[in-house]
Structures are given as C-alpha cells and as structure tokens.
Length: 373
Image (tube, rainbow, N blue to C red; front, side, top):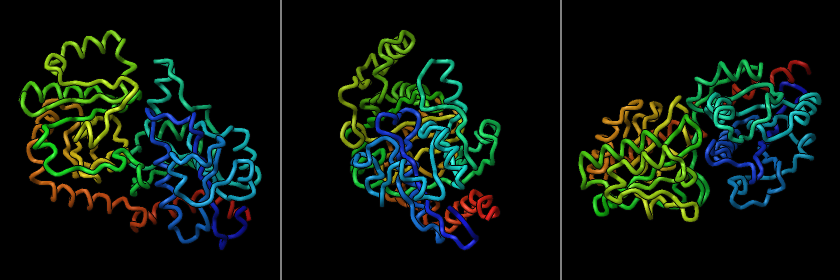
C-alpha cells in the first residue's frame, strides 16, 4: 500500500462479468477503458491493471482485452493501492477489507444514478446495485454534476467532478464498430436514422421518435427509414403499440423495430443517429458516432458544437435540425470532421487539462493514506 509521499501508485480497475453488463444503463466497459487511458499517462502511476471480477479475463469482447495485465480479484489485494469500481460489481465486504488494509476505493458513477435508483422501484427492473459500497471518493466523469448531491448523501464521502474523456476504441469497439461514414450516403440513400432505446428514463427514444415523425410529416421525401434499436421488448406494450400505429412513419412503412434477432447496423442499415437525454450526462457513444463521420442529431449541451444540436425537448427544432443535417451533411462533411477533431482534442487522455484534473483527483483520493504514513 501507499507508504510515503514519493510512492508511485498501482491502480486496479474492476470490470463486471459479462453476465452483469447492461447495455441499457451504461457502457461501463468503455467508461473504464477511457479511465485506463488517462490514468496510465499520469507520471506517478506505476501501473493500471484490469481486475477480473467474473472469470472472463479472456473475454475478447471486452475492451480490457486490449489493455495490459489482468489480475484476479483474489490477487488484487496485494497487487494494487487504488481500486476503481462501478456500483454493484464487487461485494461491500471485500471492499471494506481492502480499505481496512490501507487500500483506497474510487467509485465511478456511470451517470444518471438518481434515475437508476428511482426506476428500480417504479418499474421493478433489476439493476447492478447492491447498496452504498464503502468507498473513499466518488468520481463523476463528464457532465454528470447534477448527480453530485445524491451521491454525496448516499456514499457519505467526497464527490469529485471530472472532465469527460474519450479515446478511440480498439478495432470493433465503440458505438460505430469498424464502420465509417461513406460520403454521399445520405444524399444517395436518403436519411435512415437509428434511434437507441434505453431503459433509463434519462435517455429515452420517445423524443427522437417524435422528431423523426415530425420530420417525415414536414418533408416526406427526406426520411427513407427509421430504425428503432433495443425496442423489441416494447412491441406488446399497449401504449407503445398505439403510439407506433398512430404514426405517419408506420402508415408509410418507414419504421423498423428491432426484432431481437438481428439488430440494425450503423453504416449498413442506418446512416445517422437521432438521440435525446435528460440531465446532461455525456455518452462516449456520441463521440464514437461523430468520430466515424456519421451525422448525430442530439441535445447534449456539452457537445453543442459537435454533430447537429437541438435544445432540450424541442421536437420541432429537432425535426428542423434533422432535415438540415440530411440536406447539408455530405456537402459540409469536411467541416463536420474538423469540428469533431477539435472536440475530441479537448477530451483526449493526454490533454493537459484532463491530465491535471485526474491527477489531482487521484492525489485527493490517496491523501488520507499518505498522511497516515
């Protein structure tokens, strides 16, 4: 463990077992991958190790298969000084023992914690949540500052807001996979938006669906087909079925709902994304999409200069933005990529502002152990 002010730090990042990963709540693997990228570049960090919590260290689908050494949880106690974990991944008893031996635990909030807590009760949905795990600090990565008060009260420890971070995923990783936007795709094939349905009420498909509906009513020639991803479980829900059946998209046979067997693919079936969320929590998938060149219509203020932005829940403005993106994207693709590159540079793991913020957070987390020495 940390013994003096000159010590380097060995960090373990605990990633969930494959069976525990929930695509609808957060892209936890990707968030932790970004953390590994930024932490390994800090001068006093000796090593960043992946801690296997579920017996799937060889899982090639995990982004951590592309990192350095992987250790078992049983071996982590003696191998690391700081453990970074997301809610519900490691038993509270193990974390308490690790802290009692001098280790430090950082809980990384993947965003919309208040929504997850509420939805468990309202909708009786299972989530990876086991109560308030013992931790020394909570890190809020990105624009999740609205969650700070509830997290501070719940975990009874300091909550540190930190800048968003993003780096390119290994081959095949990220929301766009290996696909990149083909110039003139929208001009040639028409707009084929992809809408992601999230179980969380903080990032739903309703507003994007209404935006596409408004756009097709305003201009029946621009929208070729709308793909609704992860929504097959809603097919039998009466309200959802009525909403879809009442839409112009449905009447004109321009909407496809994923059937659970084959998901639409960005770059093959769809050529743009329409997204919406509440609470201003940034998603790495947004930068994945724009980095690949695909048009992204979204309402995230932190990325207002990226993609095609509409404010709040403004459906009419979102529809106009979608039509403008469909009309202008191919013509202004070079400018779009230049704006994206500038935005990505601001959140790169080696950007001085990002490095300084995470180094200070790490020092703040380890300070009690250093002071005790």
